[in-house]
Image (cartoon, rainbow, N blue to C red):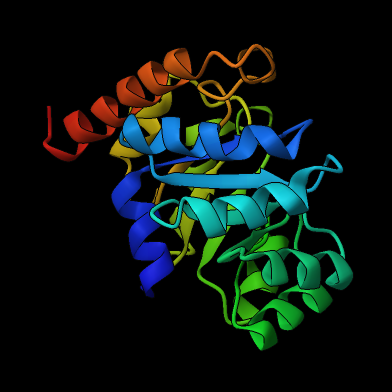
Length: 214
């Protein structure tokens, strides 16, 4: 594994964040880091995404920041220029993957079927987003897919919560889990960063318990 994926694995949880205002980015990133989850996948679903990544990268460098919902090479350029270390997409787009590799960013495309996994493998990838996780069969589907694709690691996202993240993390083919339960938009907009820090700490505690075999 390269350094970025090693860090994602060590953290265990990848918060998926949609921000309405770039000004929310730094206090949110600091709350996550203080809670023991120094990572953020900031989606390009909102206009604030690019600037939010830039502010986190510059002002909270201890947080591993990446971009989510990247659908085009132009978005990838903007995300990397803003400071994104990894690029997450909901599907596998060869053009975007190749472009990210040329930029030196780490693409994490989505795949939920054997064909999509093999397409990603042909692009030289072995770490994939499994999205949407729960609607696509959840942990059971990941276990079934892992049988023929033994070298692939997954980051399931979609329907992951504090209630089920521990079960996902116990499976060795799970690199980390993506989720938004600790960074809900209503908490961010209300600037309830103390609550976000507390929920991040709870998530970090689940990761520790799983990794310690408890």
